[in-house]
Structure formats: structure tokens, C-alpha cells
Length: 206
Image 1 (cartoon, rainbow, N blue to C red):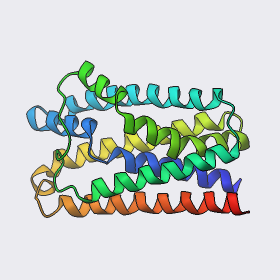
Image 2: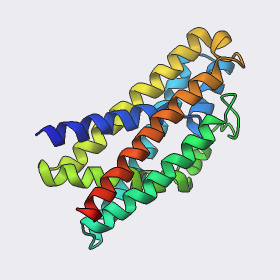
Image 3: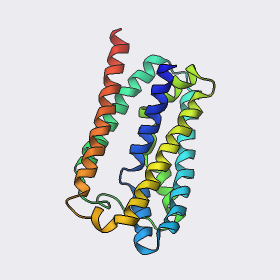
Image 4: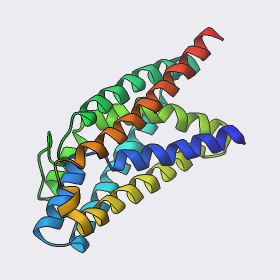
């Protein structure tokens, strides 16, 4: 039960941190806030959540349909750790919300950007699916519980970022504040990467 709880907490944390990382979704939400208002930006949030959930479900079904064993997922975890470190490096270097992203102004365009985002597929398949499968082995339908908790964390984080930006956008957009926020999230991803690397080495050496 303790292991299951830790996985669930990890799912929420991964979703929460992932939702706050700059990308097409967050950039579009912030752009909508600047051009219109907070309530209109929520349409972007829920549409993006729907599309990303479809992507994650597809990746989960793909992983479950393949004859993969524990060693394969531990190997995937090493790849996932590399993905997290790559994201941490990119985020740690960011200085503004829109840096390195292209804002999108239509739902169809945003959906296409999400579905064609290779990093999203790789991140979910390598960094999250192994834990989702592990939870499914401990709890009936645990893999879907993992996805639900992840989405709750993602939605809560994205909603909170939109609300904060709407209320304090003049302060948070200051060039001295944003780098500190991005570096914090980068450190969180580094922590998850180290956890995955240690777990994989313990599996192969145990």
C-alpha cells in the first residue's frame, strides 16, 4: 500500500509540474489572457487537457499491447530519465514564458501541435507509463487511476498558472522573476530523473 501511495503521489506531482512547464498550451493560455480574459482562457485549458488525455491513453494502450516485461520498462525508465534531464536543461535556460514556443490561436492548430509533439509521447511513454503499469499490478485498473491523478495534477497546475498570471501578470512577466520559477521546475525534474536512474540500477543490479 505504501508503494502504491508513493506512485499516486508521484503521478500528481509529475502532472502538476508538467502542467506548469512552458509550451504551446501554456503559451496559448497566457496569450488568451492577455488578449481577452481569464474565463476565455479556460476553454483552451480544457480542450488541451482532452487532447493530451487522448494522447496519453493511446500511449498507455500501446505499452499494454506489447509483450514488455519489467526489464524493458526499467530500460524505458532510463530513457525517461534522459528525457527529464533534457527538459530540465531546456526549462532551466528559459527566461520568459514564450521563449522557444509558438503561440497557437485555434483549437485545431493547438490539437495538432499537441498530437504531433514527440516529446509529449516520449515523456509519457518512458517517464510515466512504467509507474502506471506498476500501479496497475498493485491495484485493479491502477494504470487508469495513475492517468486520472496525473490529469488532476496537470489541470490544477495549469489552472493555477493561468489564475496567477491573470492576477499578477505584470509582476510574473518581469525578466528577473521568470528565470527563478523555471529553475525551480528544472530542479524538480532533475530529482525525478535521479529517482528513476537509481531505481533502474537497483533493478538490474539486484
